[in-house]
Length: 107
Image 1 (tube, rainbow, N blue to C red):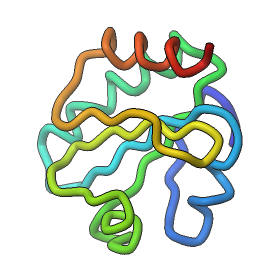
Image 2 (image 1 turned 90 degrees about the vertical axis):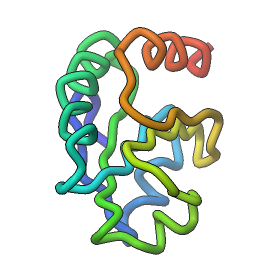
Image 3 (image 1 turned 45 degrees about the horizontal axis):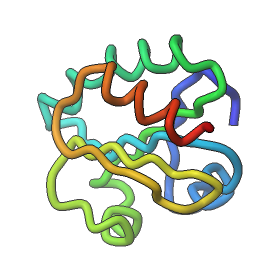
């Protein structure tokens, strides 16, 4: 995955994309206002953490992934390290706790 760009993932490329390193996966939907408000926060997170991959998964287009991660509320941000979930944040977040979590999981 190209670093510092936010990549759209789907059910066919998800596993490969999150298999190495640390990825923040944003589970979202286009009709969700708070999800759209997360976009500039994720852009800032990408700028602050150049080794962090950031991906978005549209839950309406990828129901199997939404089910696999038990998505019950969006936005849902899941930190995936080497293919395994290590932390999640539910709802609108500011960049600080996300950046702190990224640093914790990169150590």
